[in-house]
Length: 126
Image (tube, rainbow, N blue to C red; front, side):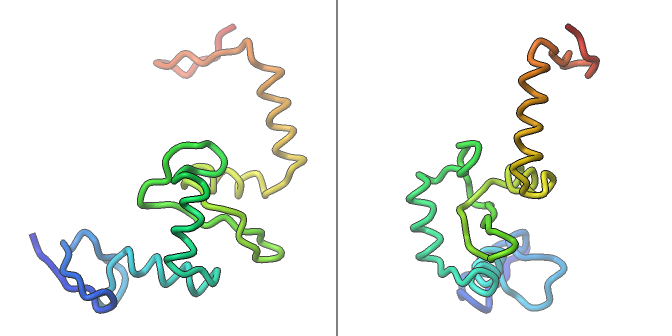
């Protein structure tokens, strides 16, 4: 397996730890740290502090953040709200970060609790 040395951290890593589409030799971890610093003004220490405050868990679903996670922020103010797993971050975006839409989705789920999905077919049954 091919190994490269990251030009930012100086660590030699496997080729899979580098973005294929990015020119140069910056590893995925350093690239993510740069993006977080540039976009949100967060240093690696600040990210670690957020992770510690959240016990390493997604602020919404409570599952482990793992090595890949998203910095959630208010799109109007740019203020960082917390760290989210990819599915929760995507869901917020799909719901347009709207409390009204999220509450409507919750009401929908509650109203349809008796309906379950058959795992093998996806057909709704009562």
